[in-house]
Length: 115
Length: 114
Image (tube, rainbow over all chains, first blue to last red; front, side, top):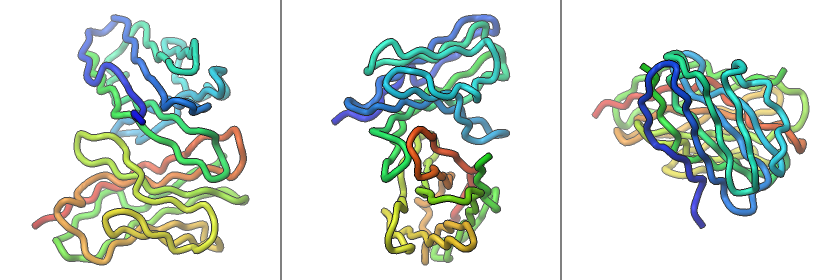
């Protein structure tokens, strides 16, 4: 089975531009997570979905960030407008369930640079 | 709020040295515990996990971790490191209840010199 698939792998964009990151979770997984990794803050949970519904978006840094999951096989994380401090690696992850005995699987990440 | 603390930010070892990376969490209930590894330029990979049972868990590549409930700890160990173990290591916790997400420590960078 294919793992979590993210695109683009790398993106360099200018400040002020809109950035859209995409994620396809593992088929059958009910939970989808977006994490951001930076040197200063480590891995931060931005938002997660259960059955396409956002459950906790308290980690989304500000209104410039938005995430959607229109169906069970696709999610987007959008930054509009982007700023240099948004430069980070954005990981998408999915799991069958959360809590009891479940493992979360990560995609390869989207490496974003905003100049 | 739940949190995960990794005490060592950067560890430098020579090949064949023994490794122990500390991890403590703050959550009073039952937890699931994980160690993930991220090799340079790559994504997070699961190294090992603890759900229940034997508190000494063996993972891939010769790594093991011991869950000590009384100390809220889940330290990662390897008796003899190799140059290829150079990576960043993340401890993570998920409370043993549905509807909660994985919480990561800030990571420990391991540099192994040959």
